[in-house]
Length: 170
Image (cartoon, rainbow, N blue to C red; front, side, top):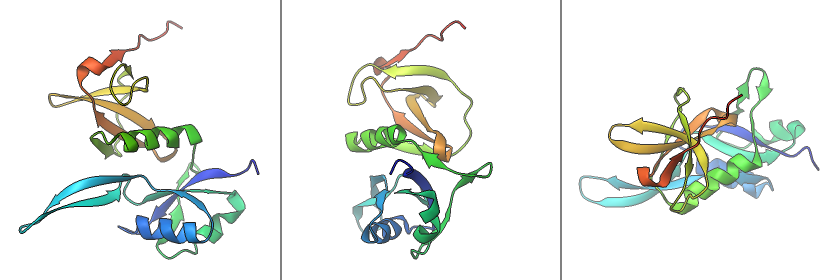
């Protein structure tokens, strides 16, 4: 079944977990990257798990089964770019999984960011990962673009762990 692909589903607000659970119950392979956040209320603090990409769930299915996936309560639509259903490569999902598993501080940023310098991580939990470096305030952020959903993951990494990769002369 080589026509199985990871499609990008858009869900109703704050229902990513419910949609993922319902899709799994129906037998689909689903990936929902979650991050733990410390929330402060007036009387207490609590750790909550939230979706890394608000409103997005990744579903591994065939193109002719997309409509079936959308019958799940909370599912809104599949993401399209220039008339095509958005898909994400397995390698890109592996990068997201690796970042989430290391538990490094992660922010996502859906804005268009001009390409910066390419960097490779030379130490720490994300060693050998390649992406772009983005300076934000006085911190060093490492950015990985997830092309299928036009999202960027910004990861705070100490400068000493980043090495600039020189551009190849064409």
